[in-house]
Amino acid sequence: MKLGFLVDLHLCMGCKGCEIACKVENEVPLSTWRLRVKYVDVGTYPDTKRTFTPLRCNHCENAPCERICPVSALHYIENGIVNIDKERCIGCAGCVMACPYGAIYIDPETQTADKCTYCAHRIASSMMPACVVACPVEANIFGDIEDPTSNISKYIMQHNGNVQVRKPEKGTNPHHYYVGGGNVTLNPLASFRAEGYSLFNKLTHLPVGGHH
Amino acid sequence: MVHESLAATHAIVTLDVALPGVVWGWIITMNMWAKSIGTGVIFMLFYLLKKYPTEAASYRFPVTVVSVVFIHIFLLFTVIDLHQMFRFWHIFFHPHFTSAITVGAWMATLFVGLLFLLLYASFIKKDNALFDKVLLWTTVLAIPVTLYTAALMAQATARELWQMPTESAQMILAATLSGSATILIMDTFMNKLSDAAKRDMGIILAFSALSAFVLYMAELVFGPMKAEEVAAVLQYVTNGGEYQTMFWIGQVTAFIVPFVLVTLSIVNKNQNILKLAAVFAVCGLWVVKHVWLVIPQLLSMS
Ligand code: SF4
Ligand code: SF4
Image 1 (spheres, rainbow over the protein chains, first blue to last red):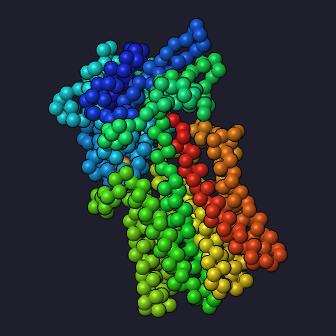
Image 2: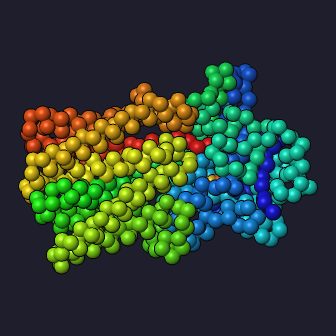
Image 3: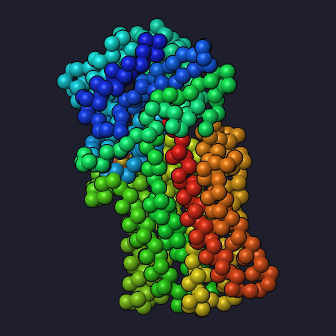
């Protein structure tokens, strides 16, 4: 069994339900994110549209983060998930340097690396990841990519030729796919990122421990 | 930092998380800089003892002390950069050998062991034959200890700028540059080396400076032709980018000035200029390493 994710960007409406569900489920601290929805505005007024792209760890088959981790805090579990053992992590940030997708952050509370685990703890109890449950339009499709009868496999087959991954040139072989993605949504170098323009550019970081 | 954007698309990121900032900052620069000196002086000592055994004899102990000091600065900064520094022992008890960090930590530990053996041979036992035997193995081990940071940078898949084998060459050149420079600075106080030996150190210094400079320039000019991420990152040091001034201060101080000064010293047979070249090289190297470390971290990965 190899678990994978697929997001149909035609369906995603940028409500950020998945983002919030993830925050709540995994108690992700302020100013850090396991999953976020990136907005890219395209076109010139009045011909504009807003694109929405949920971004999370891709659980790469050839994961640079797992390779670089000196203590195997990042490790594969049998179902293909790249999991993290926070008790073992020494906080060297090698994984932050290695992940081509910026999926890993240093948790300001535990001072260890953290990232999306595809809700490995929920899967162990036969539950779907929190973001899948929260999505009102079922844009997140999750399942076994080695089973041709699974929903995700069927979806990939149906959309043959229109299934993308982020940065395929990195050779990471992501287990996270997009339908309806394109250069603007998946390639960070294809859109302007004006400093001060993005809502989250001026984040206030709370001191560790929550003192005021 | 936009490479594939089309004016017609007019695509602008309007909502995404902020960059985490520079995660590997000046502490890692200190780490690389101190390691270059710590291994570089061992390379130089090995060379001097082979070529000038009599006059270099009294350098056995002081060079080992300098190496021990800088390797410990390197280790100290490695550990304090960890967000969980008291778990450092995990590297030895839960090692993951695909990681250059693990391999490097184990080799650096062995290297420190050999350095202490050198101290024992030179200071307590005063046995030059034993010292020279151990020095051979220390010099051999100094090569991978120097190189492992390049392997680590190569494993940082997200940072396209740090390429193998260029980084390996840069690490070795940084060691020979800072090693020869440190020996020249030490000789200001010890005054034991002949003009010929100092000239050799000067030539190694100048050759390392020139080679490293050529490599950086080659990356600056040709890197962007190969990969869009490299092109985007190098904009931080070109076209008025945030780190342009610092980049050139580093290149001039570490490479151009020392190269010119060493040439002048050889032409004018003036050994004093060599000392100045050495000080410039050691200081400039820190700046060069820092800029190259930081710039790829300024690019958003999403
Ligand atoms: S997306 Fe990043 S964090 Fe996730 S498995 Fe791949 S390299 Fe690791
Ligand atoms: S920060 Fe933690 S998880 Fe990341 S590479 Fe270092 S030890 Fe491994």
